[in-house]
Every structure is written in C-alpha cells, then in structure tokens.
Length: 225
Ligand code: CA
Image (cartoon, rainbow, N blue to C red; front, side, top):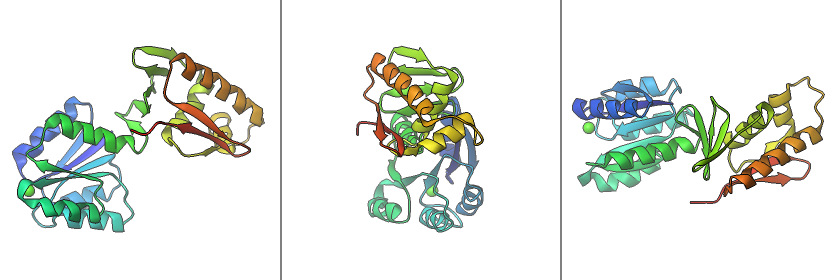
C-alpha cells in the first residue's frame, strides 16, 4: 500500500509519514502542489493525503487535474478549521473525503483505511470485505478470532471476488484467472469451489455471502455499514 502525502507544513508532513510507516504503508512526502501533481500523476498510489493550502498549486487544483487526467486514486483532503466552505469545494473537485485540522490520528488512519478499502485492498497483504479478512501470504480467511486456511483454488476464486466486492465477476473471468485462458475447466468446476467457499463462510459465521447471477457469475454480498 503506497500513500502520497502532500503537505507544506514539514513537521506535520514528517509526522504523518512516520505514522503511516508505522502502519506499514509505504509513503512519499512532497511539500508543494506542483510536486504533488507530478508524483500523483504516476498513478502508483493507493491513496493521497492532500492539504488544501499549498505553494505553487493548491489542493483543489491538484485534485481537479488528477481527475481530469483520469487518475482515480482516493484523495483525503486536509483543510484548516476556518476553511469549512472549502470542504464542499474539495468534494466538488474530486476529493473523496476531507478532514479538518487539527485532526485525530486514529480517525485519519480509519479514513485512509476506508478509502483504500473501497478499492478492495487493505494494507498490502490483506483483502477485507464485510467482517472478512483474507491474508494473501498465508491464504488464511479470518472473521474475528476464527479462521480457516483456504486451498489454492478456493483462495484464487475468493481473492477475485474480494477484489471487487458487490460487483458481479463473470464466470469466464474466474476461469481465466484461476485456471488460465487456455484451460478446459468447466463452469461446474467453478461452482464446486464456490460451494466450498460458501461452507467456509458459514463455518466462520460471516456476514458476507456469495451471490449467484445465473449464467453470468458471482458476487460478494457485503452488508452496508
Ligand atoms: Ca498548508
């Protein structure tokens, strides 16, 4: 997980960078809007923490230009307390969320997690959806204290579904990803693994279920909130 921090108050930027690194995010720090734009336009970040009042190019303009360039990286804007009307402008220009300075670090981390989770991935080695966490290195699927270790194919199937929660993943895509494009795998092969996974979700008493769209594919049903 890579985070870009664009903040001209160096002490704040460095403190944020430190905190993000402790949370195992890789972070880059830049101190003005022009550098922020250059870095963010590479599209390599999972989230951007963007101050509004910045030298050279302000935060609104950075967000606007990123969206104009079709960079969809989630943006968390930082505004000063007396810039409240800016919050709305911030969201209009393509930011996803905002926080007012001074802010609580715990809340900032929660918001960053929420923003990155929208893309399906959390903290690099895990995927989260609803109450489930899938650990990518160990293939462990957890809900709270309970966990099961998935087989390779089950893992590959679930990983695809969890990367796009609530979206229908076509069966052909699952087959292509899990068994390879040239594979002879039949549709019912996928069904077998989906049924294994459903049993494991039941065992974990998860609030997540796997829905079927007949003749199309599968999706992860995740409760809202
Ligand atoms: Ca500033």
